[in-house]
Image (cartoon, rainbow, N blue to C red; front, side, top):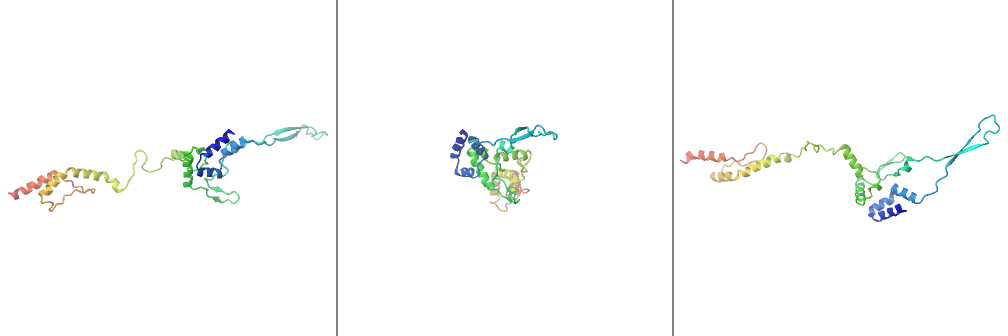
Length: 225
């Protein structure tokens, strides 16, 4: 009775979605607990009569018999409760041989398992590919199975991701040389024929060098004289 009251108190705290699921598909643990709470009379053991004297020459053969009681063997399914029909797995009709899809899609199964984990009733849920324990075992067995996420591996990435480091380095050098380039730009007539703008494309990095300004000044010196 204590187990039955415990199940009732747990059911009262469940959300309506989980409660409706357990009403439609009651877990076998609850069924076994109810059966133990209200035990029924077990069927009497079967008896077998064995004759002590089986001689064909004796006229009193078979007169005295011995009865031996035989108890039915314990079934493995009775010891470990199992689901009669798992609503999370496909079902094959034994009479027609046709396969029927599960009652709940994988998305709805994932939502139910999230609710069950939040209310601590995961042991009452049936086996499913979306069960947290099943997913954890699968991850331990197969790993992430994503190329580039292992030790010493890297993802190829997009083109802009692969060239980002080089472009940032080119941009940094251009910003550091920006004051000298501005002065040279002013000396040359505020951009007349200026073609030394820094570029960030691979193979076309033209960063301003301070020596460019001095070379231009030396070239202009004879003409100015």
